[in-house]
Length: 107
Image 1 (tube, helix red, strand yellow):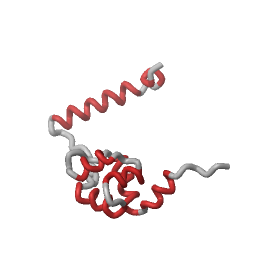
Image 2 (spheres, rainbow, N blue to C red):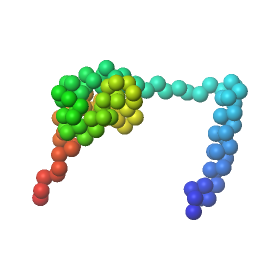
Image 3 (cartoon, one colour):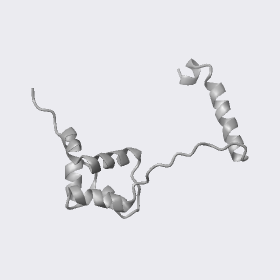
Image 4 (cartoon, rainbow, N blue to C red):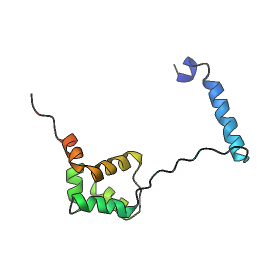
């Protein structure tokens, strides 16, 4: 059974969203804009250099593929929101990430 079958207000919400989209397209409605820190390549490079000598070492320590780090550092790709959060935690407290990545102690 689909969620829309369980919630009779689903259709109402969908119609409201469509009306808002049409009003926005016509210039009748301003939508809230949220700016997200884009994590520029220079900052990613600085984070990596502070905690690892190379992208390969960063991969070994934190599990992010070296090719991905290289693409971020070269500006070919941007980290998604979850990756930005991980990079921010590594930037602030790399040891916290390393502790979290350690296997649990045997009982």
